[in-house]
Image (cartoon, rainbow, N blue to C red):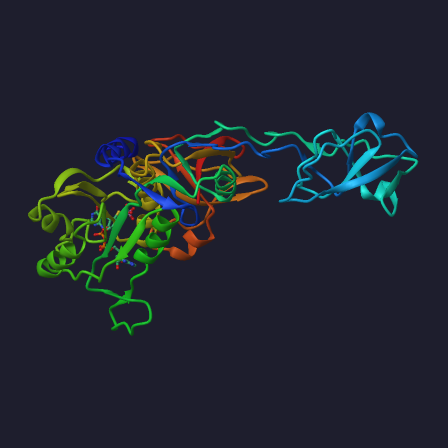
Length: 390
Ligand SMILES: Nc1nc2c(c(=O)[nH]1)N[C@H]1C(S)=C(S)[C@@H](COP(=O)(O)OP(=O)(O)OC[C@H]3O[C@@H](n4cnc5c(N)ncnc54)[C@H](O)[C@@H]3O)O[C@H]1N2
Ligand code: MOO
């Protein structure tokens, strides 16, 4: 059995970065920016008013001073003239500050009669002028790679780009296997259960930028598995769920081998998730997840998500870890790296009472996976331990 770190290395070796494509900005949220974005303009492109009021020369802004209003500068339509001594221009937020002025007096500090304004006894400090390029200037760069979020997209739009170059979304085919499974909403037979894993994994991989294809359930026979594998044609990553262990009905490995799987590894020293397999299958990477519901979701978090990030050009990095003090004592760990379902409390991280890899209700309560290294000694409450957040 190989270690989790070795398995991840092998998976990264299989996960080549996919190509890139251009997408409209409105479709770019959540995508991975593949090329830097460079500002094509200054923002603001002119000195702009930050408040509604009157633009005038700052040196003339004395309490009680009077000015003649000679025009208007609105957002979108500037005042074209030159503003002389004793003159002011009515101005609105976002409008270009006229030539000859460098200060905006807010309208609350002004009384106006006809074309004459008088400044109040106490003036706001101002100057309420945003200099040209105050936000960013031509050539300012947003670096790649990065996952594009709301703030990135607002900035890229302001830089005047209608499209961006992003990594192609990984196509992920999800194959649940087992005679015991029926789809949610169907009526299970007496010995059947509901197929849940592929739904959790679909949500997980889509949140990581992939496009998921939920294939029909493959039955525990060679023909059915062959047929469903053929529906995965064209995917970048084929993920099977279940049928990975050593039982007579665990046929995923043999059928995948018959279909050309070049196996990279089988079995990892981790708990849950031991019977994990992976390899290259034609143009795709194949990962065989264990069927136990918690095992498949933990393996999704620890292996599939980092692979999807690597495929999208974000680099080969394990699931990010943080550390927290233990809220309780924990016993020594065995020979497999243990990802314990745990909750983060004000007292520290606390493993949940039951750790059976079949229990989705426990996984659902957990907000962290407490990582116990292989052969780790017993640990006391208060000792710092690593965890992976969900
Ligand atoms: N003799 C041994 N038995 C087992 C070993 C072993 O080393 N020796 N390993 C155990 C471990 S650890 C795991 S994990 C499981 C994984 O087995 P498989 O990957 O072959 O999974 P299945 O047997 O198909 O299913 C296990 C369990 O999960 C349920 N399941 C499967 N798919 C789904 C799904 N899509 N949605 C919900 N539940 C699913 C299935 O009904 C079983 O209850 O093997 C141990 N055995
Ligand atoms: O490896 Mo299994 O996933 O412990 O239940």
